[in-house]
Length: 272
Image 1 (cartoon, rainbow, N blue to C red):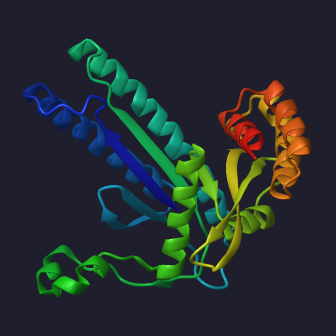
Image 2 (image 1 turned 180 degrees about the vertical axis):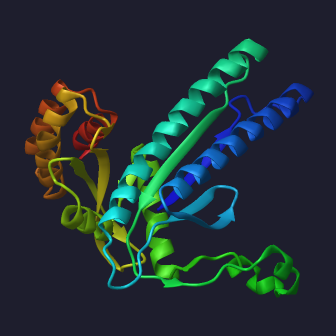
């Protein structure tokens, strides 16, 4: 599972006040990362490589032949908990800046979760005192717990990009969606297909799913849940280029729940 996060300052100023604000924003961000790390550890996962300041990888795994059900459950719950935590941090950020800067500066925290499943080799992490002996070109791989294949990482990143384009917080790869359907109680799991994208990694078209809710976590608003079947019917028609039929289904979905993604597809149908 990958979390892509970014914290930004809305006014883009370079004044001394903004410099202080950015420092405070970074404090919020460090606390957010710390809390996410604690949540992952408590769920028997591990924080894996940090490629840059915007991407974290949390890995939940089981040895070959072991039962993966508990880890699949933890991964599904963690994806929702992380994005819910981000919303809570956003509220704290907003309150803090309204109090100290009279609302003149409005930072925001954007977090997207891409969930993917794969087979990975387990490697022993390098101790801190050993890192001085690591060649610079190998330094990125040094802290790895699971040796993830580049293809799996690239596919996860494609999921995050798709989430950003569609304004969705949690997206699930077709591999992870199949695993969720196999291992989790379908009466407790709610996903919806939200797009079909061309995957450069797979060199084929790939379905993208939104993780809506699992157990008591996520979004359970009755109108939205009722709208899902209309949205997915609309998406099928849209992908078959049946735009009048698609917009009919999307309008039915939007009447039940004022969903921004549904509105996006309504606008797309009007321009086709």
